[in-house]
Amino acid sequence: MSAVQDYLKSNKERQLSELLDFLRIPSVSADPKFAKDVRRTAEFVKKSLLDAGAGKAEIHDTPGHPIVYAEKIIDPKKPTVLVYGHYDVQPPDPLELWDSPPFEPVVKKTPLHPAGAIFARGSCDDKGQVYMHVKAFEAMVATDSLPCNVKFLIEGEEEVGSKNLENFCRANQAKLACDVILISDTSIIANNVPSLTVGLRGLSYLEVEVIGPNRDLHSGVYGGAVGNPASILCEMIASMKDKKGRITIPGFYDDVVKLKPSERKELNKAPFKLNAYMKDLGIKETKGEEGYTVIEQTSIRPTFEVNGMWGGYIGEGAKTVLPSKAYAKVSMRLVPNQKSEKITKLFTKHFEKIAPKSVKVKVTPHHGGEAAVTPTDTAEYLAAMQAMKTTFKKNPIPVRGGGSIPIVALFEKVLKVKTVMMGFGLDSDNIHSPNEHYGLFNYYKGIETIPYFFEYYSAMKK
Image (cartoon, rainbow, N blue to C red; front, side, top):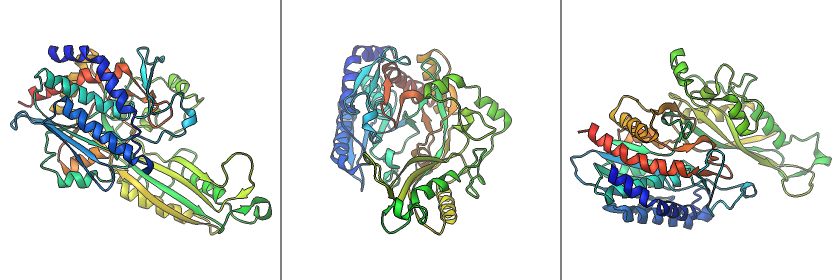
């Protein structure tokens, strides 16, 4: 490993420069106007993997955005690690809240990142973390230190639900055959408190439409007599939770797995300071399901959240209008045993039932995925733990994440292998928000740590 680490240290400036080029391409998968840029990003990934030493790299077209596959097979008898990541990013809106243009990366120092952080859309989620693997792979190849086979599966539709990945995986099971999946799309507790994600929540994501009169109306002429879709939508959404923060959809909790008191106690051993949490977010109190800590509310309990609402006139100045339609995008994070398809149906049935006769409603499912839990007694997990211990100088803490990576459950179902989630971001990195950033410490620490995972895993699998 000394040769690998020496190589990495002598190439730090180039490792950063190339990542900044990667971040300059606006690979927004949700917006069709960026389709050519998404394609250009896939080409960038392919070239980067070939330049890093891949034996072959391919772009596979799908009905949506392309998938990049690459591999380096040094010996079919050795274990194979499949690295998964995504090169697509969230839309950057609202643009006016960015301190610098989202696709013109800049490096600035912050209190949490005194060595500097890269500010750009995708810097942490997930371009920066994907590129750690490319550079770690390059270092192992360049120093003839790659101890096992490696494959890369980098997609361009994660932020829109990985619509075409399942079909690709099913059609290419032999190509993707491996012993473990390695993903860096999660976070650590702090730069001095390493952690490994051992669980993720599932997801049901939908859009709702409330339809009232057949046209927008003058709010003075018709207000007070005609049901207002925007107001009714607010009432319907508000009714989805009771005063204790519990979701009111009938049957919603039927399959929720309750952890034992001992398991909850272990979970809450993770370092957490409520006052610092609220100060960072600029809030005076938290608001979640009663009877659970913030750590539990954001990891082992399901949620219902509004991601956006609109309707009527929202332009400059005044326009007194009673809108014909109102809309909302909502998401429900799910826990083990809850199935996204079932929850989607339960929500749809309930939403239609509570709608008053003055409006019609329409529910459009977008995408979903299942929760996943990773065992902590396998060679794969132990290798990741030892790798982090080597570079952070302390044992990582196992934690359950609140986000969703639907592909984790899919990989287990289709490829029959477990996943190791070894991410290096921070929860405060503003992913999905304006001013997303990724610390230079985190980027370089990831590149430093990944080769150790390959070394330890290969030794354990002999």
